[in-house]
Amino acid sequence: MCVKKEGKNAEITCEENDCLENLKKKNVHSVGTKDPVEWLSSVQEPLLVTDYGIPPPEEFDPRFDETRIVSPIRNQGQCGSSWAVSVADVISDRLSLQMNSNITLSAQQFIDCIDEEPQCAPGNPADAWNYATIAKLMSEERYPWTGLNDQCQVSTRQCQDENCHLNKLYSVNNVVHLSSHHVDLMYEILFKGSVQATMRVGKDFTLYNSGIYKCPKNSSSIGYHSVRIVGWSETDDGEQFWIAANSWGTEWGENGYFKIAKGINECDIESYVLAANVRKIQTDEIETPIAEFDKTFDNNKNNITNNYCSQLFDYKNCCDGLDGNCSVQYENKFCYCDNMCSNEPGHPFECCPDYKTHCERDDALTNPSVIIPQSSEDNVPSVLTKIRLMETQPFIKFMEFKSQVDDKNLPEEYIIPEKYLPQITGKWADESWAVTAVDVVSNRLSMKHLLDQPVVISAQQLVSCSKIFRLTEGQPKDAWIFMEQHNMVDDDCYPWTGDSNKCEFYIKENYLVRCQQSSILQRPKLYQIGRAYRVPDNENDIMNEIINFGSVQATMQVYQDFMNYKNGIYNQPKDAEFIGFLSVTIIGWGEESNEKFWIAANSWGTSWGENGYFKIARGINACGIENYVIGVEV
Image 1: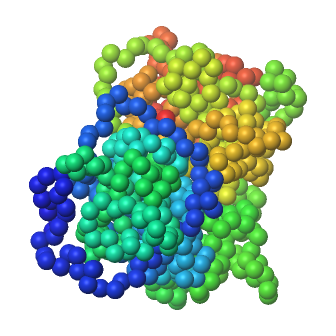
Image 2: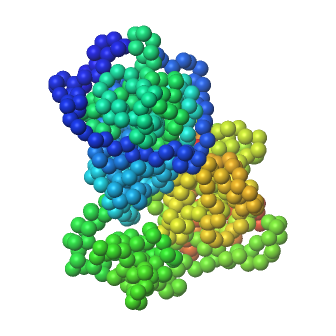
Image 3: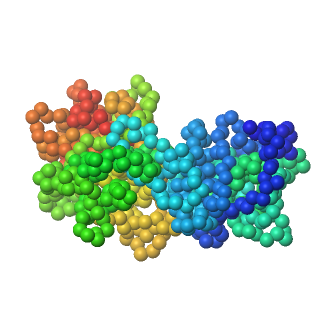
């Protein structure tokens, strides 16, 4: 139990008398961070923190603030892992602040899944942050600390029930190298949480006991070390200092913490400060330690033909191409559930035991193509275009519902501002899940920021670059999961082609990008999308969502006669043939002759329907259009 003595010069002590017993021990502490010269250039250039208009307080110590949760001190032992431990703790602090819940992330996951050195050698903080932007980070409880560099113990399986949204997986975005000005750092810590700092250390630092540490002038450096700055204060004499958490256990320093001079870049501690925005991930996957899979497989050895591809995919719906996400652990190795696998001797990608019975499918089982005409009005040849609809209803149970404010004064008719309407072209309908998602994001970004020139997010980036992350043909969930976890560019940088080709777009170091029609690296505008959520399936909630935040994505049942829609209010036919599912964008509502309707944009070109738009009965869940409505935070 830690207690704080009175006064600005107070030190933190423990009720026990052996808090500083480390002075009597000859512990050898590992520093464990590579020279910043090797990695700093891979992080976005320093950003100035917003001036909040009020001066930061003279002292701020979140350990004694009931509204804050600070991650406990860890002991990295002889593993040179401060680069990983400090990142895990900073993300944990920020998640705890954001979610008002005590969250401790696994530091071992960073070491196992990034570090290629066999002896927990010094690592690279930038690698840890960049890994956190693409990985699904697990808790300490699910992936506990070992202090050793081992095999990455993470595997993935599909979640298939309504409790998917309870998965405790986390990620970050917008990693930045913060301004070295101490006031900017104070604002960042005060409003967003602790930050990671990398500092030079000398031998005397390992013997630190208490007081304000300063780098001795004549002491040689033993390397770089990453720590977590959690707050600041000053002495009665006005000497300012940072409050920082080390990772050498609670017996070191002031119960695991230390003070270091603030505002003078002592030991370079203000030069190499990194942080990021944090978030809980919504996903339909469960990230699970491999050990838990081993138990599952051991318990089912007598039934191996039903326990591999079948646990990942629906029947006859496995991967089309080679993909790491299509693999399952099998007898201390991996087997695959895609059409690139083979059981021929020496082939590197062995098929799972149940691949043939579960995955191989006859083309006759796939959804038949539907043919509709395209017109030269869309600047495309007047030919027949094949449209493939989604075969299954959207799986969005993992998304949380957003509570709505009941506005009883909704107008009888409404449509989003004309300049923010979707840009309807001859986009392929089998990508409606992607086209409608980016239409919603583009509309909401433009409306939120009142843009004179609306932004158009790239649908092609979503279609091509999400392929390696999805297990089947595209679904609405694939669009929202991908956009939440990846920076997006606009249509000018990655223009629409309508092809489901390979991803030819990568965000490189310093957020440089080679846009599709350019031969040079540049820094375009990058858009980060927030959490997607379900809108309750009743008309008032959907109307409230549209009028307050912008258009929504809806997925509806499609019947054969819908292909020939021209005008009027469409309703679900009694005897027409059901042919699949389609995602559309609801942009407003209206009423004609006492018949209520939604106004929606399709993605079949302007020659279809009312210049690409259609009306459909409102308030009666026509064609299930009110069942699967999605909004997003931007």
